[in-house]
Length: 280
View 1 (tube, rainbow, N blue to C red):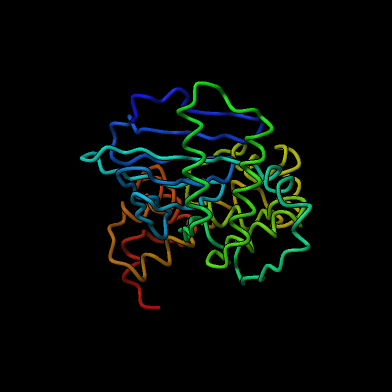
View 2 (cartoon, one colour):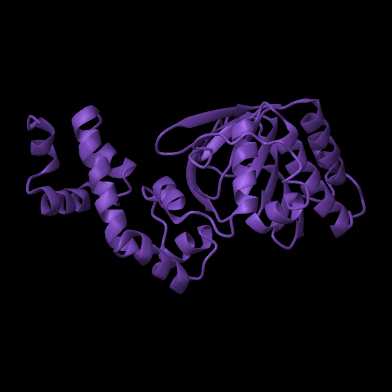
């Protein structure tokens, strides 16, 4: 079946459909995407992780991944194939704007708080992914307008599915708000080594407007805030977890244990190893 693939991707503006077989040799890789995306597993399995949690996704399962950074761990012993749909906030807005106020969508507390979540697959979504797969085996590329309709079909299927209330609530939030929340983006990504351009892209802002809006909200620069946030996270982990200092440094986004120790001592006046054993 895979030898009959004619296309492996279709791209229309800020919308991308891909059929993907994993050629990556590493078992673990850190990635980032400026767009939200949905992955549906056709064969094999992979684990998507944030610094806080992980999701094992197997054949017939799907996940919704918000824009930002994550870590992928793959099982190299089994052939892996997936369908992926990458879409910008503009695609979400254009797909749902006309219908969002007529569809009863429950507001879920902290629906903006997730980075990755499993999608509950009903018959409608299963049919969607199977119909999408057919395009990759056709000898003719589908019309751009048809691909845009498929994106709208996917968005509508998600918000109508009552088993995916957190995703529905999040999509509604995207449609009704002009720009993504800087605090939500920063809290989800401060532990990753993303540069200023990447952070601005995640917030749908130019670099200059991102720096301005960031300063207005936090009254400091992104670099200073990120360092301080990482150190506070590390201090919490040192007191509550038994991981090595090197592992904690990595989990909090530091490039090396030496860099972490210098920065930690500058802020807290002592080394991470001594701080860990100081009674509160």
